[in-house]
Length: 55
Image (cartoon, one colour):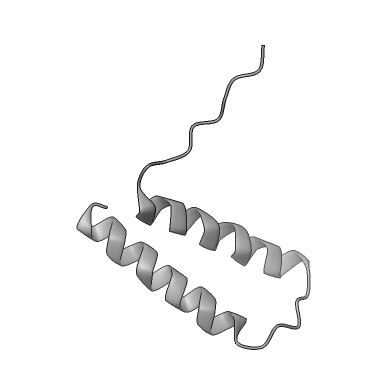
């Protein structure tokens, strides 16, 4: 039987997961999207702040 994957209820951990996936994809696939590095930096800051705050 297939088990259901559990999605985290912590917004900080969810953002961290998204950041990790996007950063990994950028290493494999070359996206030509301008400003993506700024978006990833802001995502990392938001995830870090929420994890520190315990959210």
